Amino acid sequence: MTGQPLATDVFSAISAPARRAILSRLATSEMPMQKLAESFDMSLPAVSQHLAVLKGAGLVSVRKAGRQRIYKLNAGPLEDVANWVQEYEKFWTGKMAALGDYLKENP
Image (tube, rainbow, N blue to C red):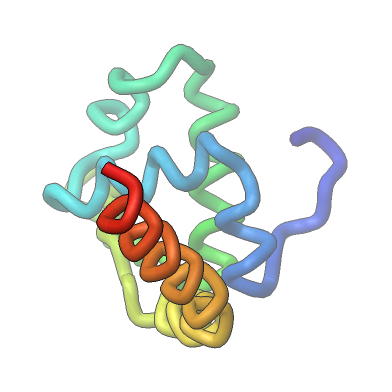
């Protein structure tokens, strides 16, 4: 991740599996970076870089609580992703319906 610019859009931000995993973890509750990092096999600086990308895309917010920084999911920007995916739903919905029909006809 070193040298990469911060993502400014949600699509770039969620392109990395580690960032998607961080979002999943934050979906359960807000937490300090140290606790969040315990869930992953990566260094604190690496988790911090991923969080910076997610923050740049507006997917997480951070607040200070004493010496800790507490991160919280902001799922609002994921609506753009949901809307984009929805445009393609007709392709897999039709194929799944056709598969269901085929399986009914050919038990």
